[in-house]
Length: 388
Image (cartoon, rainbow, N blue to C red; front, top):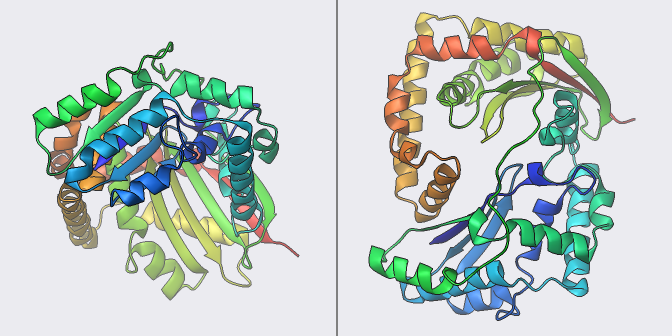
């Protein structure tokens, strides 16, 4: 398993040329100097590959049999060194990305949710647009010169992290890395990750729109601590307690007992430069947005105060997190990605400390962090109405 993380995401784009990080997730499979058809070489070596992008990173992974490990190094280094960017490949991939934008954003329920959330919560920060891009025209109008400039700036050894996991010894790995990546020289610098920021608001923000969803919906969002801050794990556990299962308070209280919603959930997104706590509900017929928002806030507050029934729930949440960490450690793909992720955060040693950190949190600690971060004064609210 060879994983390559590039320290570039949507937050590194020009505000007038968004969507480029996601476009490159596709362009990187268009062939390179010595590999005209990337997927063909992967399949003939018995491997598989894919990639993903978010606001902060772009990640590529290759899974190969051990005897073909060098093929993985060759393939990944060749597209880092000399990606084949031409008018034909750019036109094809622009078409793919534009269609994906249309399907995901214009033809699906809540397709513009992340546009609305980010526009509502940020003014100056480059987090104010989603990974897929702020405007479809930015991709449609992308030129060959624009795209090559983005590649030369960010797709370089100075801005990449490679991890290798599997049945291969350390010395062989070092030799292959030096052989295939050591000679790649590019005139650029590592991404400094310095961005404009917006202060966290201290008053309710509001937005409403029509949506393709057949039911009205309420979304509540808060900004929270970053990935390297230990409080982010506490909020991740709190979200699991509040809405992480079919017997969570959101489901039991608001969906099954009071029947205000046909679905109600929450989650916490841990990022390098931001954290977002999202709490939402899909309303049943006859329930107003105002009543739905009030109900979500009510159950949130109820579960920010300690009760005897929470102790068992919290124990279950801690056990699930511990089990997930143990499982991830046995999965080469997940482990390779986590190694790159923690290294990019500048906290590689923390990959071995997450379990002890989870164990160090008491239920009281978790509830206190939630109260400091998630309250009615700093919430961003979105109401969706079904399109007529």
